[in-house]
Length: 330
Ligand SMILES: NC(=O)c1ccc[n+]([C@@H]2O[C@H](COP(=O)([O-])OP(=O)(O)OC[C@H]3O[C@@H](n4cnc5c(N)ncnc54)[C@H](O)[C@@H]3O)[C@@H](O)[C@H]2O)c1
Ligand SMILES: O=P(O)(O)OC[C@H](O)CO
Image (tube, rainbow, N blue to C red; front, side, top):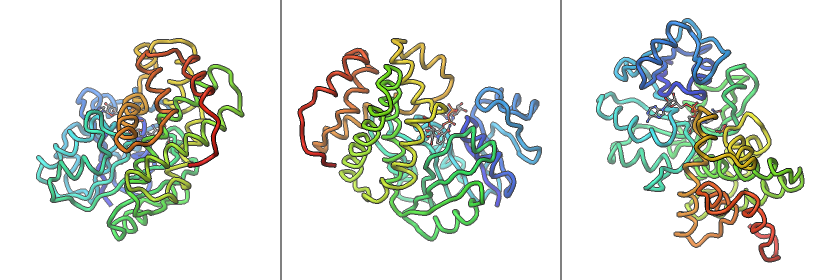
């Protein structure tokens, strides 16, 4: 296949490198200087240093060029850029199936990615889906084994695309539960910030396991409220991704939590990170949706309070620890 990977951050570059072994890849960035730099150095120094970009990879900052003759557009920009990227595809007037790999709710609308797509394609949706699951870009770029879920309401499309993208090193499972897969990927970013804070404070492994488990309950409650399937949260895009980022130091969201526990300001943390940490932007939407659906989201509430400077990390954790005793329910 010919595939346009739209977004040349860590994840777009890692997918482009991995998929280049089997497909012709066009890697697009909206930043012309970044395209020139990557083409000259054959490396993405800004977002994925240490991994060569294959010679066969075409790099461009022109969307029409990126989409020319491709069978699939794989959108890997942050959620905040998804709407603009979809709109630009519509403007190009090139009909192409679309899969997105971003994880979060849109700020303001609180939309999941598939809702943004439905709005931007205004009823004339091409075949589309979401790719999610436990996948550090760094490890995918190294060719280490990784398993992902590709969800689409059009299961024939999901099966066809999974067969094309699947390999021994990038195993692709399919699902029809777009809402569940997107919600799992979005909420885990918020819970991971909490796990990072807990570890940064020095609360130990027991507390982290409790946060992951209760965080999964929170994710499931919201996901079910939004129409997701319970089983999805037990899979790669649910508990799988939550475990990865809550325990793995390659996670940017976990790094945010660790640095918040050190008392650093959010501005300094995001400057130091140099990458998107979707949990920072998505926490407020998760909380808003929980309130609308009358769903308790205590961990998300604590993360929001800390991010917005309402309470210190230590105080928020105390509030969580002092919640009333109750039965263990989802
Ligand atoms: N890095 C990972 O390991 C990983 C794995 C799976 C999923 N994801 C998800 O993929 C998405 C992108 O993450 P990343 O790690 O590549 O981020 P990143 O911070 O490494 O890079 C973001 C890229 O998107 C570009 N960008 C930002 N706003 C844009 C816009 N409005 N339009 C077009 N391009 C824009 C930036 O210039 C940059 O090239 C996120 O939603 C993330 O949760 C990341
Ligand atoms: O680095 P994070 O925390 O954005 O996580 C990256 C991916 O979502 C892991 O699956």
